[in-house]
Length: 556
Image 1 (cartoon, rainbow, N blue to C red):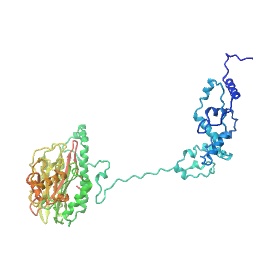
Image 2: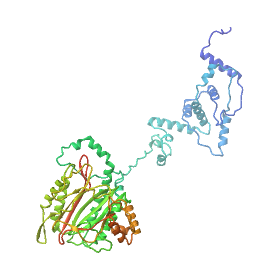
Image 3: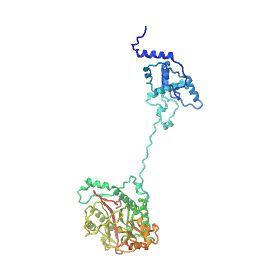
Image 4: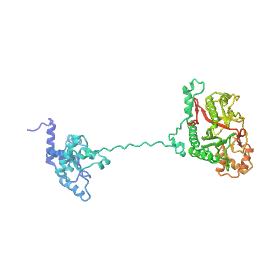
């Protein structure tokens, strides 16, 4: 009975007829693999799997979990590949006519499934024996029960060194499942860099963030705190933060240097050695770099009745004595922003009231200073505190007097005296302090007349800030002026600094510069002989929101 051509065959019957047709008309081909890598083509693999006899469950599990064989050596590589091709010849079964539907059903087998099947069959027939298959089955069961993955997939090189791979353990689980986890070694936190003794590490290395500690913060006198809460004033401070940070760096150098110097200053020291030790330490901690960073002015170490502007010249043999009163005044600067700070050293406790008078007077001046504060009011407050002290020296009582012709001063970039003077007696100018200004609040207390004059050999010099071009006839004077411009600019210097730069026979040229008004000499300032003068000084900054004592430290 013939088949009705209009009737459609069921899918199963259609597939069976198509496979029967393929078996009748198949023809053997060359056993060469379909790919150069030795893998079978997708169609050939499918045909073989359709005709393969059924396997037992154990063999199927072994095939499914079989590991790929180890890479063969050069001697056995060719024989293994030959054995695989000889054992499993590739027979392509391609019917002469294939229905389009059958072709589309073959395309659903992707290359990943074909590769997996090829590896499974290759692993079975490259020398794996029954014992290896049983071990693999046991290992698979143990791994599933312990919810762990095989060691070949989960272990790290460090774990492989610690683990033992000598077979299964007592409970049947492999040793790889019990490998020790690698312990994370706790990283030791590096301790912050500490300053040495004596100080030798630059301060910018001690503060790698670039943020240096600010000084003492004080509120303005009689202020209703509107500056503190004003957003506009806080924004002005944020704009000036780089400048604030520069001057704080200079202040940190000053604090560390003076702390060390106060610990080593002893009677019997040569004044030259004391000054050179201090200046070399400043150069090291501040990373001296020409006009960008360095010493702001020569180290003042005036003794007894000498109030200011004295430093030893080369060859000076002055020695510090037990009964001396020494004013140690030195400055540092970063990018021209100067920190001017001074203190007094006295070994004999007899002079303690004199030192206390100037310390309290300086703190009073700092308290009175502020935006819109009048300079005369600051001076009157300083004098009132200063002259409330008395000191007994060798059985004689002296009232401490303010030195009326010595003043504090405003500070500008590369300008130690910027124009405004802060008196230390009443009756000064009515000029007001302004926002953003730097001031050196310094006080001098004396047991003498309270009036100083120029005396002794000059050691301090400074180029005139407002000087223009002045024609010079002496070649040595021109050369010396070039040295001053390159190394000091308008900052103060002394003869020892010129000696250090290699200048020789420069006294005539230096006098010529002074006579022409290019360089200004600053001789020592002295009260009457036999008197004692003490000094304390701080640099303050009138910020928009508050007052900052930049040079304040733990010592004073």
